[in-house]
Length: 113
Length: 109
Image 1 (spheres, rainbow over the protein chains, first blue to last red):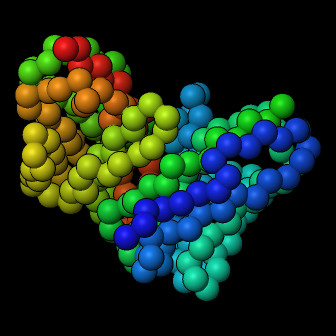
Image 2 (image 1 turned 30 degrees about the vertical axis):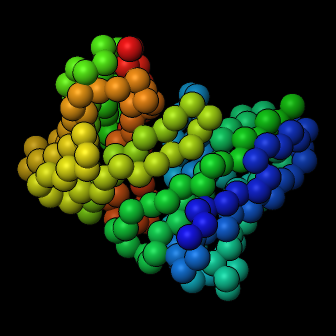
């Protein structure tokens, strides 16, 4: 089975722009979670989707949004980028909602200049 | 006080040594995860625990729910074990992981 894939792997954007990141979960997995990792804050939960519904959202401003499609693929969007949004964005999939092992993608490294 | 704490922050060991990394948390949890992150960013899930002890090869993870404490042990450490080890707690059945700051392990040959 192919693992979790994320595109693009690297991205450079300018302050004020918006960005969309994509995550394709392992085939058959229905739950996708997104995380932000920065040197200062470490790993932080962004949101989780199951069956096209956002189940929970972390403590991030409304500029961060996401969605999940019927094939379980997910996108996250960040609008009006700030320098502090520079981070590694990771997605992880699991078979179902609830307490399951998470399978992580390689991440998208976003640099905001 | 952070909800999830790890010790030590950094650890350097000689190849072959027995290593212990500790995780303490302050919230109720449905499960605790140990993750491994290599340089470059990729994260691998090592264990998911809700009670007791699990073993996979040279890795052993234990959890004490009453004490709100978990340990990750590496027996016969090897340079390829060099990575950041992250403890993550699941307070609500997969809805909102809370991560520890990580322990950076270097194993010297």
